[in-house]
Amino acid sequence: MNPENSLAKTSQPTFYVATNGNDTYDGSFTRPWATIHHAAAVLTTGQTVYIRGGIYPIAQQIQVHHSGTQAHPITYAAYPNEAVVINADQINILKSETPPFPHDQGAFQLENVSYITVKNLSIKNSHNSGFTIRNSHHITLKNNQTENSFSSGIGVWGSQGSVSHHIKILANTVINANNLKLGYVGAETGEAPHEAISLGTVEHFEVAYNQVQDSQKEGIDVKEASQHGQVHHNYVHHVKRQGLYVDSWFGVLEDVEVFQNVVHDCQGAGFVLSVESGISARNIRVHHNLLYDNWGTGILFGRWGEDGLRENIKIYHNTIYHNGYGKPNPGEEFYWITGGLYLFSNNLRSVEISRNIVSQNVGFQIGYSDRYLESNSNIHQVFQQKNIQVFQNLIHSPDNARSSIEAGWLPNDWATIYSFKGNKAIIGDPQFMDPTADNFYLKSYSPAIRNQTPLYLGAFPLSEQNRFWWQKNFPPQRTKGNGKEERMRE
Image (cartoon, rainbow, N blue to C red; front, top):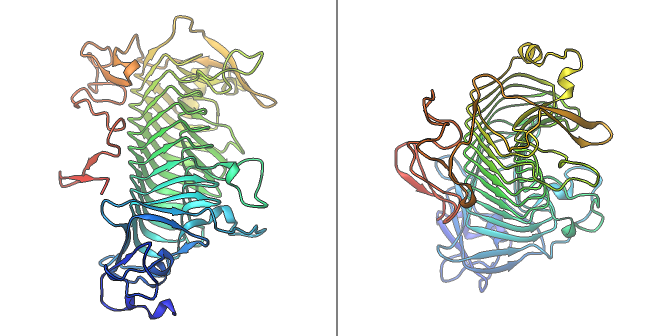
């Protein structure tokens, strides 16, 4: 049967897929289709397909063929309260020497489409990505899960000729992405591609309430020439590299806000800002994040790649605790990226670092590399010339704090790192409620809230009730602009 002749071309708005269905049926509740592929081929404007619970082994990529409209989107969803697992292990992936490369493709592919929502589906064992969005707009992925993928669990891609835009990645869980062992025949063998959640050249995006864990590279990466987006309320932990990454390639990356995320137990840094191969990264705001117990630096201005310009950067109201504790290489004293907040790159301009709590990090709390002193030994003059402002941060150092340390990696990235307090620093114990229980709210007598303007430092406002939104029933409800709460899980 030609799927284009399916009853989905009629006005019927809702269809069903089930493991006991048949693609020659009409897709009704009592006569469901058998495959998600069939639904993806025939669903059109304003229609919804509910996929009944069960395991759906697939031997070829699911490709969405049609777009919805703003008033009448298309929805792919699990049937309420039923678990849908798409097992992509049997997809035969052929190596390609030209783009699009297999690792940039997904088991569930949304390419050149618009106004689509995909929710409550699970993809496992993908030898490329789980979900891939390419050159598309007004796409929402909500409350999906990917587990075990060679490339990204979720990848969103555009190009200079066709930018993906108005993308929402909400309340998804990504587990064990970037696993080299899942590579296809002929795939690269040095390292798996991309990151657990990757956005490359995407505009007007929201990445929120996602959980990323136990993945083999970075957690969430906003990269290439992405613009105008928010990364917030994500919970990233136990990944092999940095938890959050903003990284310019191929052009200008700008207007990205990273806030109210929780990152811990990552083997790299908590958050990194780099320009590996682009023109610049600019207008970046990083605030109200909790970064703790990471092996590497809490917040790092990296030098990877071409080390391009970062400008108009604001780092404020973050809580940065006990980072940099990774095991040093033999013969070295510190982990290769250590400390609380590290200005490793000196290719920075107009940077504000303020109102953060930086406590009990290894080696230093706030530090800069010796590259800042190459032409002028007066760091205050250097910072003034670059318009780098460090002020009103709470600094709490271990008893063995030193004015400088050495750390990095050979041959070109070994550095002497100097501690720096900045202006109007508050020195002392921030008096967290209980760091051993991951409670970084402040006691009433904390120096971070006494006589301060604004009323507090760090990530957690004094007036806010203790909300450990990342610890249970994740993802939480969120408050919409009308004051009502929206459940992330449906």
